[in-house]
Image (cartoon, rainbow, N blue to C red; front, side):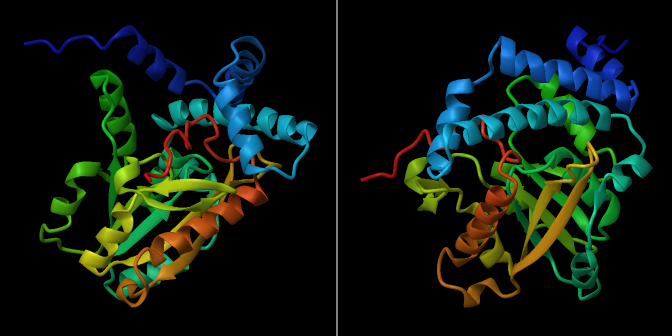
Length: 290
């Protein structure tokens, strides 16, 4: 029985993935103009998030960050399309930085949890991890409602051996026997249900964070690392990774101590390169429960 033909938009994504990097950034520049000048995409959300996060900046400074964010967003979209087919060598050359700490933890037989924010290109980070780390790579994700897009992203993310694990299944996944140490990659800076969130002050605002990462670390005795991906501004499409140790024995920290350490690192990195975060997400749509 013949396989159904992929839908038009999936065929278009696959066709775009085969164009040159030069053409990718031409397309990105066109999308940037469209999203910032013509549509404009989620402008109210972006400017409100920026103004509340940087109360000390004037309106010209806020607009400058917003303009750079739109370019970053457009680049992230088209870079992700390109990653669907580009060779491993191109993935590896687009991230620089010292990952010796991860290699050492592998030789020590330690399982690791990476807590990350939506900085840099997180799809590139996932592919880099599965290519470069010796650990088995388990990436936590939320399945998309559109099955065709969901499968396209699964095919992208598992190209080099990573295993995608739905958010609700990760606890059961970690109970399975394994032949070698693993790393869990988890971005936890989107908006969680308010009743179950850990609440703290983040970028001058009352903010809820997912608790799941810390719970996983404590239950499974994981070493917790934080990874930040900053853009190398002189080289479009290239990133620098900085890996920091949050804790080697999480049970020695007070409750929510893992999250507080990660949140302060993320906050500092956003302030250092403010356009490089997911400002179009409605991050503060929930209020702390009374």
